[in-house]
Image (tube, rainbow, N blue to C red; front, side, top):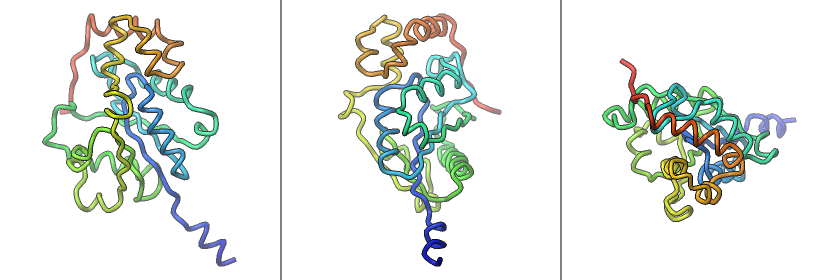
Length: 204
């Protein structure tokens, strides 16, 4: 009986992955798969939930969530939870990084129900160190991967450029099948954004 009580109170290993997925590509899926392999539960946070029709955030949160879930095998879809988080500033505004770090951290904690988690990240440790102060760092274990070496510098920016160039070969090489299945829709939507993009913004 005592053993069962201890087991019930054990903290689950939680993995967290933050990305905008504009659109989802194979580097994103690599990170999600790694987290699913290593953790009891995985929380995927889709960023910039409140932005669309800008050059860096063209696609809606609904479309991004749909393509992510369709890209995952069934056993991983059952293991992960997908949440959205809105932006409250522009990405270029770095003077409030620590405020953003707390905003992100407490959003995650409120969803997974515990303070400790593994954060899967592929853009270098400097960004993370600028987000989290010493109080928060003790609860976050970094799981870092070098995207440039794993996927030849793959980024969603390059995927969007391939849409503009009508480069289906690049999309097929670096994106899951669901993106190819939506190629015409995504390309036409993004071309419309490129023609008349909304400006990025931040909350007052």
